[in-house]
Length: 290
Image (cartoon, rainbow, N blue to C red):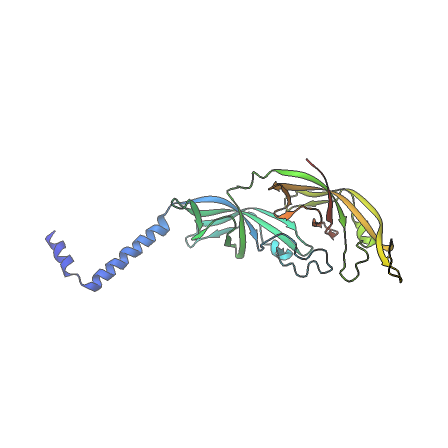
């Protein structure tokens, strides 16, 4: 004991500094590598802030809409992709990949991932690589050399309680032009390409939209005579197309939503993207729910 006391007395300031740094490093190492971790499931929406459409019913519908991801990028996602730390432990693993066509050139992608997180008892929250895992927060993942930046939309399947319904609505396919606004009909070949029974599927093959009924008539055209009177006639080229759709929706706050955050309201559009055509009909009437 005497020798230990003498040794302590002989330590200089620099020795105490070195010891202090060593103790701090050991404490940090213990916190990082020996803290208790757990796994949670989260859904990450890749590369977009919103699935809503900012450029509605214009000839340049897709030109300014850069949300979602490009079609080629979607091919890099698959179940079983992982992110590992420096010791080879799995930090994140893709359990499910859900996609749907947002436009002909871009897709919305949702990744269900299993995250290795640390639980903070004081705040009651989880952190992933030091970043809080919260609905609405952003997250970065490196999945088999693919960098993913996305928005967390669900944690531990908290949204599975959504009450999904089938909503039947009447819609009109429109092609409005700010310069030539005398008719809102569509070209004949567009009308011909739409078939009763056509469906829109998500990446898992689940039915999101089904066309129940289709009505086609010559498009109404507004003209103004030389004396200023307005006349309503029929366009010889374009067609008015009315579609009855069955849509899978969920109800939130008394409103219906399609996919994640597209409100189903009168005069709002519903995106329909199939293998052969892409249209954005406007809701004109609610028929029923089931």
